[in-house]
Image 1 (cartoon, rainbow, N blue to C red):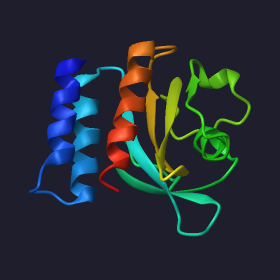
Image 2 (image 1 turned 135 degrees about the vertical axis):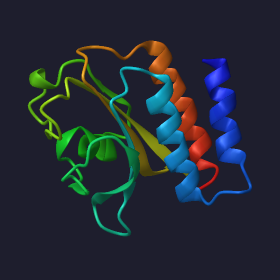
Image 3 (image 1 turned 90 degrees about the vertical axis):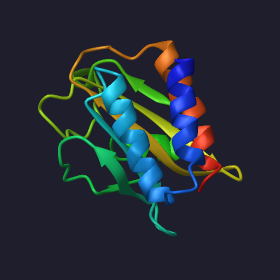
Length: 149
C-alpha cells in the first residue's frame, strides 16, 4: 500500500492538472490497482443544499448524480461524518442501488476546516471485500484530498 500511497500523492501534488483532473486520475488509479474496486467516485456537498453532487468517478454510469442527505449510504455518511463499510448491500435497508452487480460499498467522508464537504464512494461486485488496510488507505486519501480542495 505504501507504493500506492506514493503514486496517489504524486497525482495530488502534480502542478500540471486541475483539481477535477487530479480526482479523476485518483479514481482511475484506485480502479486499476485494486481489483475489487468496481466503481470509484467522489461526491461533494452541493453548495448550501443538504445534498451531495456527483464529482469525478470511474465505473458504470449512475443515475445518482444528486443524493439527499440521509438517503443511501452516501447520504448517511454526509450526516454521520463517519466511514461506513457495508459488507453486503442486501443487508442494508437504506441502500441506494446503483447497479445490480454491486455487492458491497465503502464510503469515507472528506473534511475541510472541520466540515464534511464530500466523500469517496467505492462499490464492489464482491461480498465483504474491504479490509482494514483499504479503510486506512481511503481515510488517508480523503485527508490528502482535502488539502487540494
